[in-house]
Amino acid sequence: MPVCLNCGKVIESGHNFCDECGALKESRIHELYGLMEKSKYEPRLLDSWRFVIISFALLAVILVAMAFAFLSFFPNDAKSKAKIQSSVCKHNMQSILEASDKYHQRTGKELRAGIVGPKHSLVREGYLKEAPRCPTTKKYYTIETSDSKLHVLCPSKVKSHSLEEQAERKSTSSPIDP
Image 1 (cartoon, rainbow, N blue to C red):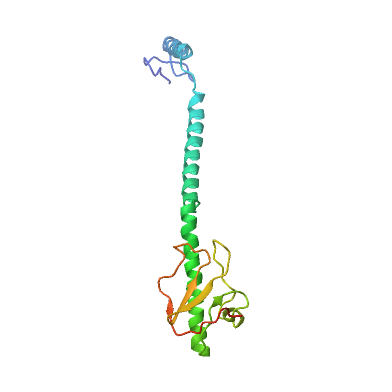
Image 2 (image 1 turned 45 degrees about the vertical axis):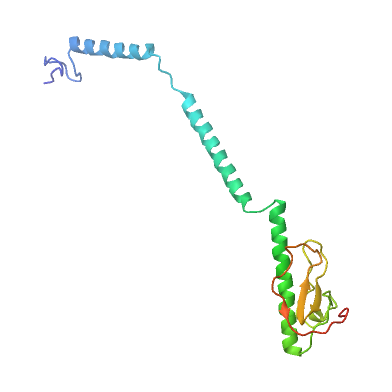
């Protein structure tokens, strides 16, 4: 036999509450629904939009930071360019000196002074793959001899385009090596 879950009176089967308690419960439910309808609560769409806007702003800041970091690895100012050209120029002159040393060791001949162009013996005989040029002026380097030293000179005449150590050897001084 079923009883009211609220007051304990005997009720018909299939019901949970007696008529008095059921009406009270039902009125209480309507009262609570009424309170909800009167409340000022509205779902805020701004929260989802705010999240999207903040996410895009944060993404934009991260992308800008990454672009700045990426671009800072590539020098683009005149001072950096001059430093790189000076380094390349010194490397080219050092390559000519090393090739002239190999030439002297293998042939026993001394190089004559002159322009190290495509027809120079260092290039013709394979000691250099090609005649190097100054990255600033695009002109060929010059070999000069003085006081038993072999000097490789840059055609740009820029102070930073020179080697401190030059090969010390006896050499013949003819005007130009064909």
